[in-house]
Length: 244
Image (cartoon, rainbow, N blue to C red; front, side, top):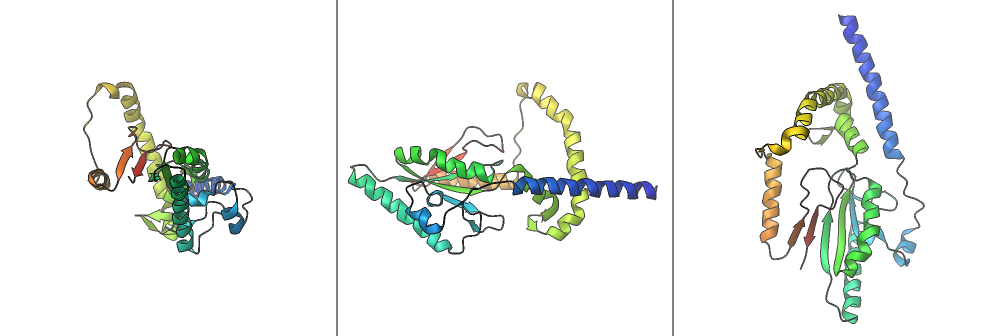
């Protein structure tokens, strides 16, 4: 009996080690390209993503979208954004147009580093043309890195890599068991769920988020536009805060 449990535990550690390597390699293959130095970025004719994006790292630090390194002078980074907003509005007024509305974009789950930064390049010009100055609040919410943190690093919302590594077999088995157990429920919901009336259940975090949305909707300083797609994690644009 003890020999069986020992062998099973050894196999689980091997599986988890391989899974960790796969997740690490998945995160490491993200390629940003050869980024020029800061001076050339700010003087370039190309769109400088940093003027439209605030990328937040895993420890809450400000990340440079080009180098993926921590921004040491955060005030200078933010000042450059505010100066660019003033420049955009100066040009708009000179051409007889009104001031641009500050538009804060917050994405949802399953967004990798490339997805978040590429979105800025895709929609920045169109949003400026529509009279909105976009400011993207971004972070790495892609699956590989987030699940690796869940499995090996984070415990109860706290960064605890040692405890996370030691308890990772338990967490992995629990995740696997939950997935298997929920297969019948998921199949039932797919086949018959659309014909039934669901009872809404909200967690304390969801209730707090809904209260915040209600406060924003009632505030005169902001207009809150939200996608009708309310299925949790999504790669679509979910929330916009418009400053009139």
